[in-house]
Image (cartoon, rainbow, N blue to C red):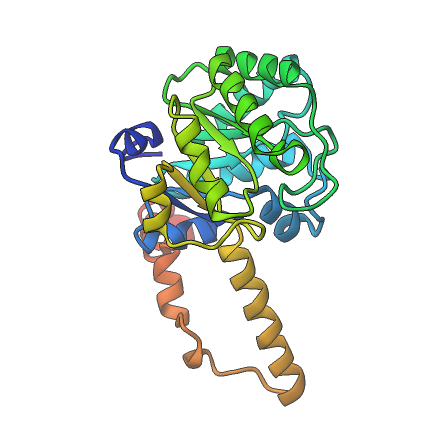
Length: 289
């Protein structure tokens, strides 16, 4: 990762907009469009890389491997989903160390019971707030890079209401979280209340299905520091694949490559084929010529 750190972007007091990505190519595309950060979505990782729903079926090792590939592919900060931290505070220590080695800028950890589920699904349950606070303290202590951010997520709003979620957010801030993430507000009023009632830390908002789909300007005015858009590449890829394959099935002929947005030559240029061919030429042995 090069350029500004996520901490520096937050300190600049402008909203950090992080599109959801699930592999190196989608991260590279987001970077090429001028976004300053990306978000490795757990839902997208489970769905697009493994064919699973977001129900805790993907392991920490698999998530870290994906995060490492993504972080190596771009020079902008990568925010990564780390689910519940994959266990108790001892597991949390290893989780932080593994994600930190992977090169991501931040992880978010949540207070759901394991196996967890997508934050915008029904039927969630949360662990005791004290137990989550202990995991946050362990996470903060485990990092070796002070620029590596711990984002504490609570899923309590959907279960116990906004007041209880705010109380948890305050406890998690005191435990050492760098950013607070109160998941799945369902009204504009709830969204606005979160940064107002917890001014002690920066806030992240997750623009997933149950949360009102507001413009980024409104999110910034509300006081959020980071906005995740987890489904944007996932939905685009699924929709495009369905439409193309349905048309192919009906017509019996694929579209000409020239009709697609990205030409084959442009795609190879984007993937730095000329750079790698130059390296190949530079280091090719005489016996290969």
